[in-house]
Length: 114
Image (cartoon, rainbow, N blue to C red):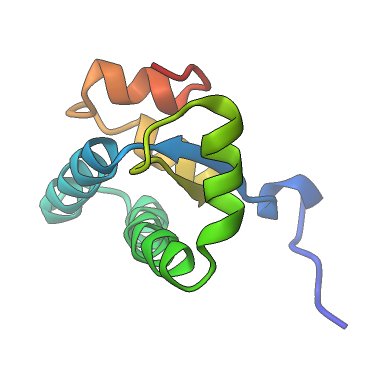
């Protein structure tokens, strides 16, 4: 049995954001740069570090279990490099508050596919 998070139970839900390899690289660069900012809030820093972890997990997940993402890409017509990056609401909010986040990536993370 696992313990539910305090507060909003949907806060722990991870939603997939389908990102291309270029989007994932740009996101990693922006997050790494944000983590070097001494003014970043400690809680936001934890969430941003979790985003970096998820970027690695997404690639590993596709290497071990390629079929699920391949089926989605085939049905949607997305390129072969598009992978789901699963983010919680807190992680997404932390990323969206980074001022240096490029507008096209911000749009993709906001729910619109290019």
